[in-house]
Amino acid sequence: GKNKVSGKVKITAVNPDKRNYDSIPVCGGVTFGKGELFDTNGLQVTDLSGKVIPAQFTVLARRGLDKSIISVAVDFNTPLKSGERKDFYLLFGNKTFKRTGKNIVEKRGNDIVIDTGKLSLVLTPKEKSFIKGKEAFCAVQSIDGKIHRSAADIVRIDENGPQRATIFMRGKSILAWELRLTFFKDQPYMKVDYSFENNYKTGDVFSRCVKSIFVELPGGERYQCDRFQGAGNALFSQRHARTGEFMWDVYTNVNGRKQIIDNLKLSGSGRAGNSA
Image 1 (cartoon, helix red, strand yellow):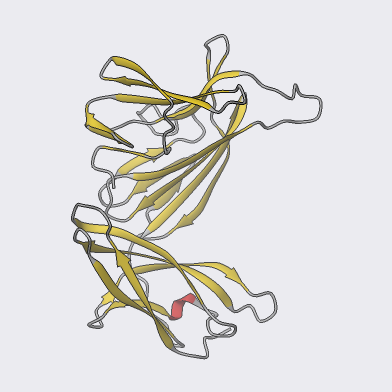
Image 2 (cartoon, helix red, strand yellow):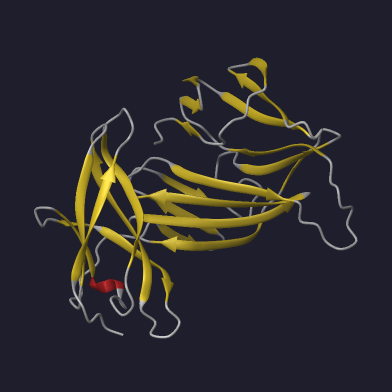
């Protein structure tokens, strides 16, 4: 249906970091009341002066009866200084706004071409390395020390717009693995979300013993993982002794120097190069 009411919602972008950004993605969800919004073509983002900000809108949920939109994901870019809070308006109504900008993702056969304006690469999900010309894969190391890796069985473009795009991949190498790679307009990095699962089926050995599970990605000239940061090549492996006592340690290999740090649990997030 057509949008029958008009209004605006204030959006606040906050930069908690100690660094300034010339351009940083702003992503968030906005909810609407019953019957307020049906068509995202009636959405527009402006700054407080009324200047239009290029944005992408993705429907997250609709109501079952009247099909009005419950919530929308809003994506746009803005400069933000360290500690800055900046307000915007999300306008909605029955006027149709023209969308501009090229989508980030292009499908070419089995390959997926990515171009954010600052990052260009080719994803090869049907190969054992999912980035062309680089070593990038999910892997399981079995007890005998062998590394098992696989191409993706399922590949899906979950979202593709001028501001943000997400690629989903799933495969199996002893354990099932899943990857979600998210790319942002004018950013030189990608966001990586991953998981492994014991894809047990009736008749399988219920307990699978493995030595390690990991994701290998190409990095930049610098690295950062929790309190660790520096220049060069770095590997961080979280280890968990399955004894019931919740014993953790971390194995590190930084520029060839190896170390085991007892009683340390990593957050699971890190940076490479100039990623934000």
